[in-house]
Image 1 (cartoon, one colour):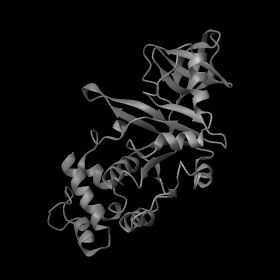
Image 2 (cartoon, helix red, strand yellow; image 1 turned 60 degrees about the vertical axis):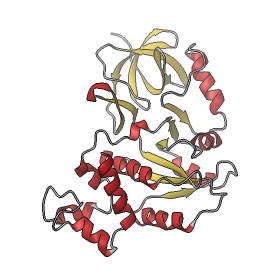
Image 3 (cartoon, one colour; image 1 turned 90 degrees about the vertical axis):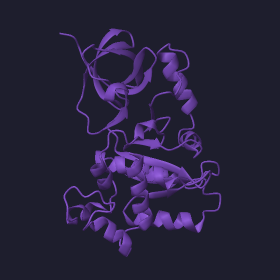
Length: 290
């Protein structure tokens, strides 16, 4: 009987998958009939050569983040995530529409979600502060940091400890500089993966898992495509707004669109000011976008 070893998938490389087992990195292929392996997966391996193996089994996942793929099929990008940290910044501008989109996906996939406002060494406008207060009232943790000035990083490190997290955010918000501030030897770790797997320098076109010095693991995933609305229904979008959830059963009609339907409890709450009108307006925009 072939001996099996448990490992953690830390990166996808051109022709293989980097799996960590007992502190060393193995270059692995997957058994043909196996589903797509994601970064963060716990897997069972068989050894084919020193530090090389074959993934025989994917262990049960507690969560999975999917990327839309060709032919209406979604591909897993990251697995076993505890919390999605949405990075946004004072500059170039706070894209609250994109922020709501990320949070709607988290609500529907049961990911924990937290907000990280970067570049707080710059002045934060009253308008931004007003919007941020809505998210905090809804129970979303908010971390104020500056990757360049190294402000607020200790609080964020404490939050990241003991869990598997992923950073998401549009380009220009300083996601890379924040990741580099939290993982000072990130370049060295990336090169180690490349050297061990003899794949040359591996480019960050896919997600990569890093162990944080203070504890916890962080998946660094480039791009925002994994957080598209492609697979979401308008009903799920409404559920994705946390403050709408208690109101959804109060609408007069089961198939209420929450736009101009008669007896809509969500629209009434927005008009009366018991939920944030700006969030409701962004919901309408996202609904159109779908």
